[in-house]
Every structure is written in structure tokens, then in C-alpha cells.
Image (cartoon, rainbow, N blue to C red; front, side, top):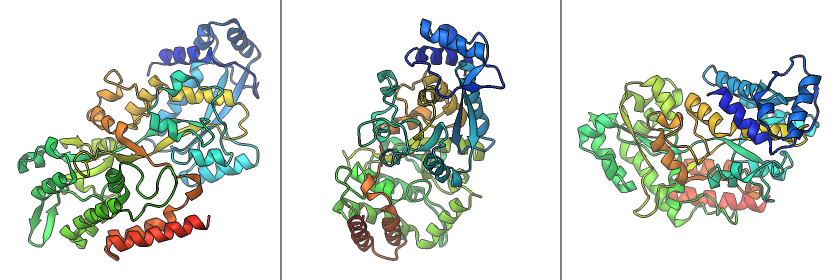
Length: 453
């Protein structure tokens, strides 16, 4: 990333935002003089404010909370923060790394105590809930149409509260595709472009199976292994959330479509046998082996970030990408996905400064830097072959799935329903109950849960 370009980008953007004091304090480190952001702002008011800040040594100190501590991620996050700090002299952001298991409860506690951080990384799926609970500040006062329109509509919808206000901007998103082994496809005479439906997928998979005696040394596919659960396939079949009606929140667990699709998912385990499923499932769970990377599995549902993993574990593997096939012809290639956002905790001392950082991080250039460095996907709709990220292998193919990704946002009134539904669905996945009975039981449990809340 070219810092001068990013500095110019932020400077131009800051013309639109008043540079007020909001909690400025003396900084032990004087902001960079001759800031390009101040020079490029172009208005007397903003340039005077910048000059005053520089002359007085005043800078607004902001804390950015997230959980990225690994050597693979933290250096790039810190570089992003440094780039923002170098791009202007009004604000200084410090990255605070808090473990995943602690950060969310600590954020809520700090909000309740009236001492929140200034910028928080958080889950996309629960923006609406946090907005309703008064845990985040709306950003409508700072948000402009050019920023808002730079993201796929479904992700901005996820960042919008039930009151119509926007409470966050998307930081990164994921989607799901099928990765396939090109050499094994060629060996079996399979053309990936001809796999259009679930029936096509099943036919192809069984051409790829290799069995030594009573044991499979290679399986073509298993729907619930990798990063695709039962809900992945039922969302694909429904073209929308599968366990509830997204408009009303009413449970739809045991719908006819769900029962047909779930029976199909279970049929794969019955075909290969429970012991084969358990063996491959344990291999993925252990983290020690990856059956797809090793060639023991020909196709695998995984997220967009899997390319980075394969670059480390199987750098010589020649693989291709497919969209999830249609449940039935004409049904579409809908897939589930989620993501993370940046938001301003309720009561943050300088919302306009926090927003400037959020806007910087979600800008075209910074997102290109983060995605190309980390392998994450951006929710921006203007990424193309001109970005460094899209020049990486398979990225453009995977990006096709973003337009058909369904971000499942749970209505606030049924938040927590998964705790009663998932264990009962799992009974059907494992064959403890028939798939129909499992869904009927989960439907009843969901209805009882909703009635009691």
C-alpha cells in the first residue's frame, strides 16, 4: 500500500467532516508536521484546525479493540493503524489486542461503565442486536452516499439497525465455494463446469471414490465436512435462511424443502458409512491433517480464506473453484456467509474521529492492502482486476459467490434459538433420529423457545 495515496484519500474525505476537538489531550509524541492530510483538505476551516492541532501538540487519542494477535495477522493490522496515523495529524489510534474469549464481554462491561473503547471490531451478524441494546453509536451523521454505496447491499443491510440507522461498516466477509482437485477430476473424466445441481455433484463424487477393501482411501465429497454444515445446504435449497422466516421470525425448521434437503445430506453419511465419516471428520477436527490438501478428498466446501491455508499446507496442489451447485435446476447458487464490522461503542468520546478511522480502514486502498496481505475478502462491490487482491489466484472466481451470499441475520426477538435447534438437528445428522423426526423435534423446541421469550 502506498501511504501517500492513502493519506490523500483520507485528506479528501476529511473535507466532509468537521474537525472538532472531542476529547483532545496533549500527546507525548508530536504529530507529523507538514501533514499531507492538512495540506490537501482545501478549506480554511479544516486547515486552520489542523495547524492549531500541530502548533499546540494536541491530538485526539483513540483506542481500536480487536483480537488479532497472531504473527500472520497482527503486523498487518498494526501497519494499517500506522498508515492511518501517518496520513493525518488530528487523531492517533492505538491498537489494543484482546483475546477472542474476553473482548466481547469486556466491551459490554466498558460500555456499561461509561468508559468504552473508541473503535470496536465485532460480528456482522449481531449488529442489529447491539443497536437495539444501545451498545453502538449510529454513524448516519458522518456517512456519505459514496461510502455507503461502495458495499454490497446485503452487507450494508446487516449493518443497519431496525430503526433504519447505520451502526457499522463491513471490515471483512466470507463466503463458501467448493474447492476441487483438478488432477483427480481429469483422471476421472469429470468436467467441473458440468456440475450444476446437487444430483450432478453426487454423480461426480462417486466417480472419484477410491476404495481399498472395506475402507475408502479417497472420497469424492462429504457435504458437512470442511466449512459447510447442514445449514449451508438448507440455505442453498431455500435461497434464504432455512430455520426461520426472515420477515416474520417464525420457525420453518421442518418445512418440506428442509426435510428433502436434510435427507440428502444424511444420505452421504449412510453411503460412505458412519466410520468413514467419523474418520474424515476427526482428521479435520484435529487440525493435524487436511484430507483435501493431502488428496484423500476430491472436493471440499470451504470459505474464501481457505486459499491462504492451502498456500501453506499444499503449495503445489492444482485446484479449482466451483460455486455450490443448485438444489434443483433454476434454484440458484445461494450460500451462507458472515463477516466482521467496525463500529463505534456507545458513549465513545469522539465518534467523528472513530468514524474517520473506520472509513479509512474500509476504503478501497486499505481494503486492497488487507485482503492481499491476509486473504480476507472485502464487502466492497468495486473490487476488480485492478486490485492487487484480484491478481491473486482464484480470488476473482471466489468473488462471484459474494453476490449470491446470504448473510443470515437473526431477528432480535429469536436471538439464541440456535442453542435449542442445533443439538436436535445434530441428532439427525448423526443418525440418532431420522432426519424428519429431528426436524420435527427442533421445530417444536424452536416454537417453545419463541413462546417463552
